[in-house]
Amino acid sequence: MYTSYAAIGDSFTEGVGDELPDGSVRGWADFVALGLAAHAREPVRYANLAIRGRKLGPIIEEQVEAAIRLRPELISFNGGGNDIMRPRMDEAAVAERFREAVLRIRAAGVHVLMLSGANPSDHLPMGRMMDSRGARLTRALADVGELDGVTFVDNFSDRGLRDIRYWSPDKLHLNSLGHARVASNVLTAIGVPVPAEWGVEEVAAAPAGPRSRNTAAYYREFVLPWIGRRLTGRSSGDGRTAKRPVLEPFSLP
Image (cartoon, rainbow, N blue to C red; front, side, top):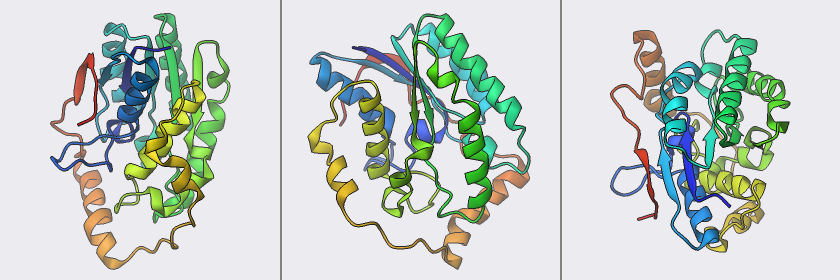
């Protein structure tokens, strides 16, 4: 049973899309920490170093060693989602860097929780490209997920998670329901009961949401600003720091 946990990654792991009333974000990693604490019946120390907008290279350079230095029992690692959305992507190079990072964490004696991100391709203008790239990257890393000391949670292949009910208005980030489902996938993979009060099974059993349609307002509010950041070399994570940079006892507000 893990009583110390550090999460590294991009907006998926930071929790973007699951906004709280005070403007902060929660997300699946927070839910996992809560689930671990409920199961252990003791405080779980939790850190989250993820920063939105980060490509895989900066995640590895800025977060992997920082997480290892915290000496947690468990590190979750996800990345590559922002690489997939770029015009060009060297999938072999991304997969190799991902593999090396996992091996580096394992060499430090830490169990690795390796995740693929959820698949938003049903709802996005560039969905086919993201779907094919994400599928190829997931397959390329399948052998890493089978290594000793690594638990692989394949959210990309969770078809139920593609339902529009699990996605925030930008259709790129999960909403609170989606983050809860990812947390459920994670806890199940490591043998920890999913708290019934999360209602994950009830939501999954409900009818599917309506077909997603992208209106002109959607393009103005979400797509054009994203394109603007790409053209000017900016990122949604510019100037941001980790929301939980050190291991501390965790409870949700």
